[in-house]
Image (cartoon, rainbow, N blue to C red):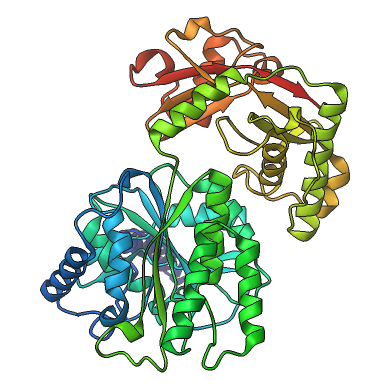
Length: 520
């Protein structure tokens, strides 16, 4: 017989073994449970009040609104990059919203950024919903959480907060229209400004410009004048729309202040989603988009409306440059290929880059410069590169053609390199003294038929396939010591997100070369 101590030890050993088995089993079950956990779905809040809750009736109403808007309002629909739409109940505003949605009917977009000012709370920065999908009577649409995380990494004022979105109708009412008019699957990124005005539209615009692809769309949700009489609303809102169409942000802000000072009876606000509107205007101005007003009406125009107290609704689209105009601009830019810059002109561009970064990092403002030099006003592309202790700290650029002069391209790219290069966190004020600046003025990229035509150290290279593209400046070859095949493989893989051998194995990949006049 075993001694009692040995028996106790044996039982303890068996107990530990069983406990271990239970832990392993529990962990396995937990992992399986995690995989099978239901997704977090934002349920529709306004279905049955702002729009029909029954799928068939909702689809029928949207079809009626689109049909009433007209057969084909917008030409060049593939070039629509942003729209402004109202967000009141469908009985009041959907007939206006339909004009913007008709302009994108049948188009395909990868991501749709839904933007407005929060109507349910006050907070700092931007709230992005952390649901996995949004539900409407017409089905569910996935939230691009991965892209939202990228945005939050770029700007710490962008944070996840589902509670802010839970009882806010401004973005929800747009989704049934999007589900009805767009071709194919798309994902959404719901964004609400917090209304405390410590976070400016320029900050979100910089982030969006760094993450948006060619197949992405901005949807700006806003109503216009709130609660003046009918005639006052028409007058005020027409001025607002004119300023939006002109991309005149300063004029719009002045219009808002002037209207507030007049104490117009009933008037409370000209744009309840004004920060989203200004975000779209800034991106449009910097990207060469054009704005077009499609429709205006207010609640006094519907049968159930009261002309003594109205809300205004506008439909606006923002279009990229038409293809034929883009080609003409490209050909014109080729004739203006980068000529030499004097030492004084180089110094001025470096001064612009440095002062812009310092101002933007310290105050969030991009400074203006009085530039009379005709050479610096040519339409040319440029990259601005920031380094710290010999290590890359930010590098962003833009190629011609563009409507902006060279000095302004350098200014915009300097701010973007400091705050919107997705590979790095934004530059902090304490880093400014350690930064070094390099400006590269670029010739217009030209397509080549054979990758072996590339001359390392002389040519910068662009690889492009569909919406994916990547670029290396000429100096990258010297800095890395790569041979031509490694240079191109890294360009395909690191920068364009394409297979490393895409430059020689994929007939759909385009290769373009350019030269760069770099100085630091």
